[in-house]
Structure formats: structure tokens, C-alpha cells
Image (cartoon, rainbow, N blue to C red; front, side, top):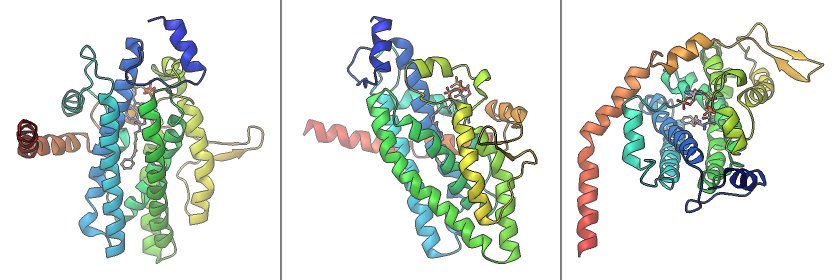
Amino acid sequence: MNQDKFLEYVQAENKVEPKDVMPDDYRKLLVRQISQHAHSEIVGMLPEANWISRAPTLRRKMALLAKIQDEAGHGLYLYAATETLNNGEIAADRDSTYNDMLSGKAKYSSIFNYPALSWADIGAIGWLVDGAAIMNQVMLMGNSYGPYSRAMVRICKEESFHQRQGYEILMTLCRGTKEQKDLAQEALNRFWWPALMMFGPNDADSPNSQKSMNYRVKRESNDALRQRFVDVTVSQAEFLGLKIPDKDLKWNEETQHYDFGELPWDEFMEVLKGNGPCNKKRLETKRKAQREHSWVKEAAMAYAEKHVSV
Ligand code: FAQ
């Protein structure tokens, strides 16, 4: 494979498809990123699932159930996209990638290691977590790998609904009693910095960015996307009547962007190392599900084999 020709091909905005010849490091980069994205969707179901049985109304419960089911669908799409990269030498089959997550070798988004402590947190997750996910995924619709880029188109449409249902939960709380508005403010206080961390380390500390940009997987940098997220979210918080918990947040006339404070990077690193508030609980929940529900997979496989041999 001629590396220069491949770079020229993707940099001219052409898509790479599963059967195309591609450099190993491109394949590995995609397997890492797409499978970690899939793990995030699957582990990301857990904080919200905690509130299905306690949603305040039937309508809220139905919307939350639909949202969480969408996340499962996104995870499955993304595992399927990852599997298209399996070539025998670089393992990308479902069991390998999933086991990498269960063993702690592969990451999933740091944000899902934080708990959802109140109903307002469900609003904050939709507004901020899905909001940050959309900001990143709209950029990824333009990535060079066909199956990933196409998956992003549909996923983004669904995430927009998620973002709105979260914002609407907070609008309702903010127009309610003082106690309800306080719950919304506390949720924003808890989720603001972890949501900003979703975009990853600062550009200067991001080891994968350069290669990813060259290969047109990432189209914008971690810092550029984080800045855009802050810029659009401030007025949304103002509309709710909530205060963003950052004393350094300030409009900058010169740059035409908001300046904002330094993220708590020590906390980010701890969460990545497995020491966040819920890392152990999240992994244990998924390991337990794997142990206790393996019979479902075995039954499905047995059925499929029987079906083929008839
Ligand atoms: N958490 O060199 P970079 C969602 C890792 S979906 C954990 O900058 P890269 C939907 C990174 O993997 C949310 N780890 O890496 C939903 C790398 O480690 P590695 C997920 C992080 O890949 C909503 C190392 O740090 N979205 O929320 C994080 O160029 C509600 C160095 O970083 C995606 O996965 C982090 N926040 O840029 C579901 C989008 N940040 O792998 C349920 C696709 C960085 O070398 C409910 N992914 N790391 O061991 C991406 O766009 C990129 O992978 C970035 C990181 C931007 C996340």
C-alpha cells in the first residue's frame, strides 16, 4: 500500500470502504476509535437507566426509554461498523472489542463514570452530554471511513431528539418551584466540567490528533469543538436562568468567543485511569450482565446454526 497515495485519496475527500486496501495504522486507529465510541453508547445507557423506574410521569418515562433504546441501537451500529475492519490480523470482531472494554483495556467516554443523582441530572445529560456528543459527531459525519461516516448521519439525527428532551426537562424544572430550579442548577454544576472533558485533552496533549486529522478521521481538533460547545451553550443556560459554574467564563470581543476556565485535568486523568466516581460500578455491571446473560447469546447461536443446517 502506497501511504502517500492513500493520504492523497482521503485528503481529496474520498471515502474508504471495507474491502478497500488501507494502511494498518489507519485500520487500527479506526478500530480503536469506533469501538470506544460503541462502548460509550452501551455504558452510557447505565446512568439514565437508573431513572426509568423513577421518571416523574408516564410521558417522561416513555421518552427516556426511547432515548436509552436509541443508545443501544447506536452501540450496535458502531460495533457493526467496527467489525467491517476485521481482517484476521487486526482483530475487530464483536467479542474481541467488547472483551477489551470489559477487561478495562479499551476506554469509553469519561462522562459515563459520573452518577445521575437526581431527575434534573437526566435533563443535564440530554442537554449537555448529548449536546457535546452531537458537536463531536457532526464533525465525524465527514470522516473518511464510509461505514462510520454513514452511521454518524443517522446517529446525529437521533441525538438531536435526545438533546431536546433533556433541555425540555430542565425548562420544566426551571419554570417550576424554587426547589426544582435548585435541582437544575445543581445538575448543571455537576455536569458542566465533565461535559467539557468529553472533547478529550487539550490539543497539545492529544497524542492521536495529528494522525487522525491527516487521515481525515477527525476533522476538527478537541479544543476547537470544546470552544464551539461553550459558545453555543452559554445562551442556552441563560435562557434557562441558570449560571454556568465557571468564574472565568467571559465573552471576548476580540476573539468573538467565550473565554473559559482551566478544566480539572487531574480529575480527567483519574477518571481515565479507572478512579472516577463510578468506573468500577459501571464495569462490574457490564461484567455481571455478560456472565448472567451469556445463555441468551448461546441460545441465539444454537438457533442460528440449526436454522442454517435445515
Ligand atoms: N473519555 O489523543 P486523544 C455519547 C482518550 S458518545 C475517555 O485526543 P482521540 C452518546 C483517548 O481515547 C460519547 N477517554 O484521542 C451518548 C485516548 O486514549 P487511547 C463518545 C478519552 O481519539 C449520550 C487518549 O485519551 N463519543 O456520549 C476521552 O484523538 C448520552 C488521548 O486522547 C465518541 O467516542 C474521554 N472524554 O480523541 C450515549 C466520539 N477523551 O484511545 C449515552 C468518537 C480522550 O489512545 C447517553 N471519538 N480520551 O487509549 C472521538 O471523537 C475521539 O476519540 C475523542 C478523543 C475526541 C473522544
